[in-house]
Length: 202
Image (cartoon, rainbow, N blue to C red; front, side, top):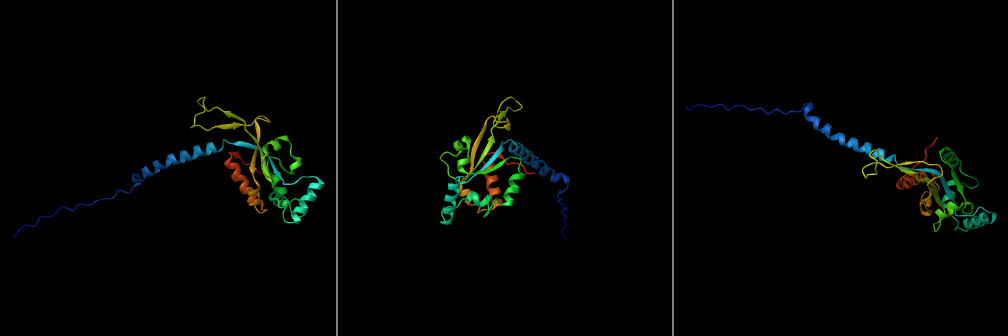
């Protein structure tokens, strides 16, 4: 009879040790570094120094009466008033919130604005929210320039280079439906879009 040739058996072993996982760990490092860079850039923002909630009414007796008549006729809704005030007085939760911030918050009428607020709200609609923002000075980066790849930070100078920015308009205030939490959310979102750091709370 014929001879039977044995075929050598080849065994394939899978390498699943620590060495196989090492490349994945190395690939994750650039992602972490990128997140740190983003965080450092996010810290370089303009600073809010004052906040104004401005009503769509005058603070005089005649102005208050005119607002009440419009409200009674269904034509005097003020989105800012519904956030800050109840039927008789300022809402306790709004009072607590504004006193907890590290910047002053003023809720005022149109005729109580100073000249800078008049300029900031010129040709703008009421009610609204306006912020006083420290524009500061650009601080040079480590290599003495302001390259696009480097974070640009702002230094705060008292009363120097400040500006007043229009933050929330009537439709945005109305969208809050008198709810303080919704107001805080919209305010923070708008400030973030303007590269303005939200005030800290105590």
